[in-house]
Length: 606
Image (cartoon, rainbow, N blue to C red; front, side, top):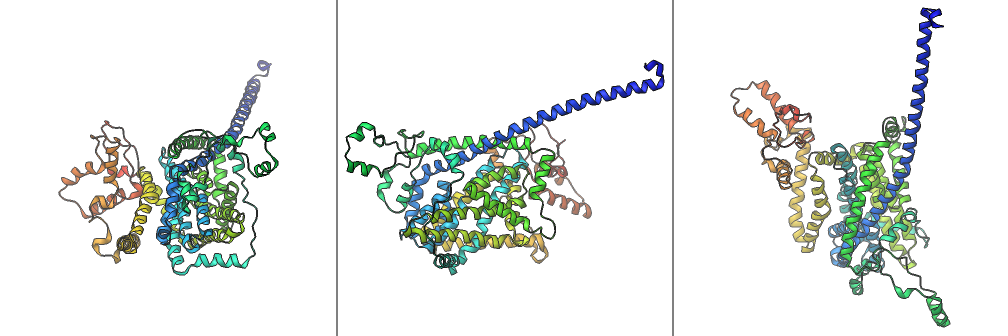
């Protein structure tokens, strides 16, 4: 037929082949799309399962910390003379919350101390501030699990520490204000006395209904032991935090037949023991059980987090990631763009109320910030909303207190609420005052260069510095002022000089326009980095740094043109800028020729 049609027949034949090829290609594309859709849909249940085990690991991690340091936390709360010092109360709140990994446990102890008359409400407010700081350590631990990839780690660590920066800055302003005026105490007292508040129902446990069936099979704790030690009950000191299975609690039918009516009426008030858990009959100390749970929960946390990040990366690719980023990070249309942040606060507060834990919500945000789905600017109001959400949960829990403890419990919960509200008013409404974002970004850049800096930050901010301040406060006001005042003065001076160096260096003396006159170990982390990398065996002895290679070139230079010298000085300043410094990742033993200008671009050495 095509031969009879001639040239037009050849065209018709080619057209038929083209149509057949298109139909085959469309069938292949549709099959691939169906397969891809099926794979993506099957990942969603796996994502929910990983989130479930992630939350369970956080709950078990909190129990492990309480077993390892719960009695120590009770002993810290026991010394009421120390708690009357507001600075000591602040660091006690930080240390206790870090030890028990639960701000709700710390808050319940504070409420019990206040309601029993052992602690005044005004003295308890700094401790509440400390619990607000200590609860954010979980985010930092979660962010450290993403240290494998530099950019993800930078974003994740910045997203985790933005909570710390907000809390520390709020404490620096509001703690002196509270000590001088008692603002939050008076506000909470006015609210409590103005409304006829009655005992209500307990706070709804929405998330625990799902997770408790699993976590109760692992460990069950008697948290009244910590509260009893804090209130001075010496009988609780020899009592284990782990709930033991009481074999006499099982009552058989034959036993019931031999018990008289009066005994039955007394037994009717008793509740049957909880189901068995993993350590119910284990003859181990609290510290041993805590260390076992700590290792297991950290392993499960790391595994779930790594798998979550990989799964999110596979799901949030291409157009999906662009759509999600656009929906989450885009502001509302003009002139309502400023409302987007407050809407994010509302979402953060609502989600925290649902999961009943600010640590769980912010820890779940951290991987999303790390992979770039949520920006740091959007994560900030979400975190602030989470702070408000956890206080509303505490308010509902306070409403379930007995009548004699109701006023104190509500007053403490309201002080926590006012602390976060005043902090938001200080550090959010005006864009210039959003200092925590810039601080967190600087910390993220620092950890991108020196990954060990995250561990140093964790130890210094949540353990060493609070312990040092607590020790100084125990020595008395004179010692604390004598040591603390020079330290605070030097810190303020350095901050002011850095600010003037960045914006108006001409107003400074020539010597203070840069820190080059100081020894290198006082103005750079590179010497400490060399020590740490040598100690960990991560560096090669035959590998030279960029500074070592540039030294011979500068030594043989005899005459330099002023323009060239100025350009060289600018290049050196750019090279030494903290943002552009990165660890050397070349393979040891490989001869490398590096150009100084290319190193700050993080390009491949020649």
